[in-house]
Structures are given as C-alpha cells and as structure tokens.
Length: 106
Length: 119
Image (tube, rainbow over all chains, first blue to last red; front, side):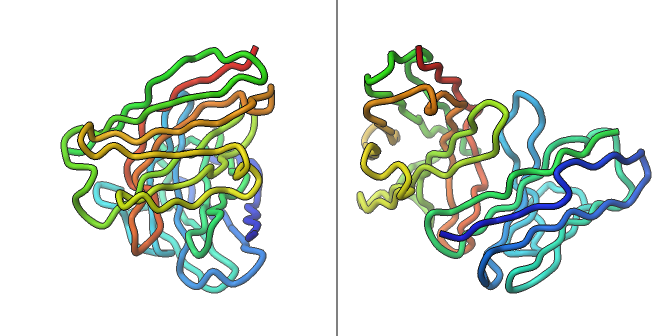
C-alpha cells in the first residue's frame, strides 16, 4: 500500500499570507495526486486533481505542483474561508490513500 | 447537478452489520466515466478509503477491510450500497459516499456524510 505523509500537521497563518503544504508518497505515484479541503461538519471538497489541475469553481489562489513522490499545495493570499483541513490523496493504485491532514488555523 | 445522499442507521450494535445506501440524484449513476466509492473518517482521525464499485459491478476494496466489506449497485434505483459486517467500536465514523473520476482517480462529488455510532 502507498503511504501518504503530509507536513505540517497544523499550520498557523493570517489572512493575506501565502502558505504551502507538502505531501510525500511512499513510492512514485506519477501525477495521480489530488488535494481536498474539509471544513468542520462538511464533506471534503476537491480542490486540485492530477497534481495541478484546478477543479471547476475553485479560486485561482490555490495551486499544486510536484511529481513522483513529492507534491505541494500552495495558497496565495489566504482568505478567511480558507481556514480548514487539507488532505492529499493518491489515485495511483488501490487502496487509494489520504494524507493525515493539515489543519490550517488562524 | 449530480448530488449524493447517504442513508442508513446511525447506530449499530457491536458484531452486527452496518448497511448504508447512497442515492445519486441529478444524473444517471450509469452515465459518464465514473465509479462510486465509500470513504470514512473516524472521529479525530483522517480519511480512510473503503472501496469502490463500477456500474458493471466490478469492485475494489481496502485490504484492511476486504474480508468484511461488500458493495453493490442498483442502476434502476440510481443507488449504490455498502455493507460492513461484524462492526466494532473501531468502525464508528462519518461515512461518505463519493463519485470517483476514472481517469484522474479523484473524488469530485461527495455526499454530506452520515455518522455511524457503534454501541
């Protein structure tokens, strides 16, 4: 099974900041890397798929990069609604696995 | 716009089976290049992929749960279902159904989630 490791586990930031979250796979997953945002009491929401493709309706301040085993999610100019938990997920092979999450706090 | 909605008992006794159904609305479960998945989030923990089913009936399951998981799809009702046998406290979680995209293997539409308590 492929293990996904995110860092940091939590992150404090302010409105207007630029933040980066990293995700590392235990083996190469090519470009099968997706990012989700989850707010309390809500289902996860797909932000980015295939490393860097923005899901429809997602603001352009979200971006993704990386390849192979190392990936990043960057949020430029944080907005109040961006404070949430972020998960990476690999779709390279089953069982599809998620990172443990990064909680972005004010 | 496609929407997913989970339904089923919120309370299950230990050693009993857990059964959930996901109803797809706003589109046909058989259309497009999608598969249908179950994902859960235990309290205080991260997301765990349970498994997926294609409308052909083909399935993939998480090996950690494979011996206890069964999924099915009913295209006439636009529904798919999860059955998890012999539950324990470790199976208590919010259970989500989600639509997966074939090519990207990303989950683009999710149900709101349903809390299952084991007690």
